Image (tube, rainbow, N blue to C red):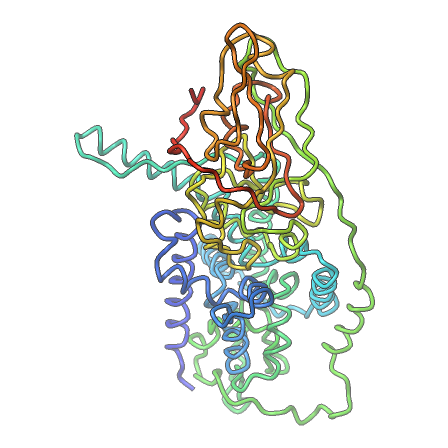
Length: 523
C-alpha cells in the first residue's frame, strides 16, 4: 500500500488551518470578516457543538462533519483541523531537530484509558450540571485561542508597528498601527503554563496530551473505533523494522503484536512513508477474530470505571477583582466601587447562560476594537475562569460596534443587529458624589457626560456655577464610557454595576457622535 501522498496532503491542510486560525486571533481587523475565517471556524468541534446546541442552526453543524470524517477515516480532525494539534506537531518537529541522532524518537505507550475517559466523563458531567470549566481548560481550540490571543498577539502587534515605524523613517507611508492593551497579569498565568507544559509533552511524549487529557480526543477516539477505514499492518508484509513505531507520535503502534490502537491513532500518517515494505496504510476495517462478541473491551471497562470515579460536581467560587491606577485627582477618592455582578458582553443575555456556553477561547477578546473585553479571573466564579468580561479600566463598549456577537463560535454571545444592541442594558452607572472631583476638588469636569453616547448622564447645578452628574437610569446601557473617562483615582466617581440578566434601555432622542478616547485625560 503505497500511500505516501496522504502525509503530504495532511501537512498542507494542517498548516492551512493553523495559519487561518492564527491570523483570526492575532489580526482580526483584517481577517475576521473574510470567508476564510468562516471556513477555519466552521469545523472546530467544541465551538460548533455548543453553538448548535444553542441555535439548532445548520450553519453550526461543523461538528457533524467532523464526526462523519471520523467514522470514515478516524481522528483526522486531530491531525488536520485542530490548530492545537498543528502546534504540537511544530514542537515535535523542533525537538526532532535538536534530538541526538541515535536517540529513539517515540515508543509504544500504554493507553491511559481510566484517566482519558475519566476526564471525558467529568467534562460531560460538569457541562450537564451547568459548568464549562473543564471545557474551558481542556478544549484544544480554546487553549490555542488563549495562546494566540494573549501571548502571540502582542508580539505580532509589536512587530507590525515596528515595521510601520521603520517604513516611515524612510519616508514611506506605512500600515496603520495596531493597538493592544494588556489583560490582568494573573489571567496570563494559565496560557503560559499550558504552553510550557504542551511544549514539554510534545517534545518528549509526542501527542500524549491528545490521548490523555483532551476530551475531544477521547470522544473522537471512541467514535474512531467504528471507522470504515483504519491504519493496518499486514503481518505478511511487515519486516519488523520498527520504523513505524519509532515515528508514531501517538505511541499507538505495538510492534510485538503488529497492531495499531486506532482509538489513539491521530491519522498523522507518519508511519506510512517510513515503511520500507510499503505495507502499512489505510484499509477497510475488519472485526478482530480473537475477540469474543460477549467479552467487554478494556476501553469499555475503563470508561465505566472512569464514570464511577469522576461523576462529581464542582461548586462555583464567586469572587471579584478590581484594578488600581495612580490617582489623577488632588484628593484621592475613598469610596470603593463595590461591583456585585460582572459586566457580560452584549449578546450574552443572561450571565448564567453565558457561563454555560463560553469556553474562553478569547476570539471575542481579539476582535474587540476598544480592548474592553478582557479575560476574567474569578469575576464569574471558578466555573467562569478566564471567560471574557467588560473591563472599563482598559476601554469601553463602543456604541457602534457589535463585533463580538458576530464572531463568537459557541453562541455564548449571540449576534445582535446594531439597532438592537444600542438598547441592550448591560448594567447601570452609579455615581459616587464623595469621589467626584467636582465635590472633592471644586473643579469642573463633566467627562462622564461628554462621553456618554445615550445622554444618560445629565449635568445638574451644584454650586459656585459648577455642575455635577446625575444618572438617568432608563437611558443608561452600561457601556462604561463614563467609567472609562472618569479621571478620579484610585476609585472612580462613576462605575457600572452589571445586570445578571441584561435589560432593555429606552432609546435616546439624540446621540452625540462618539469620539475615540486617547490615552490620558479624555477631555
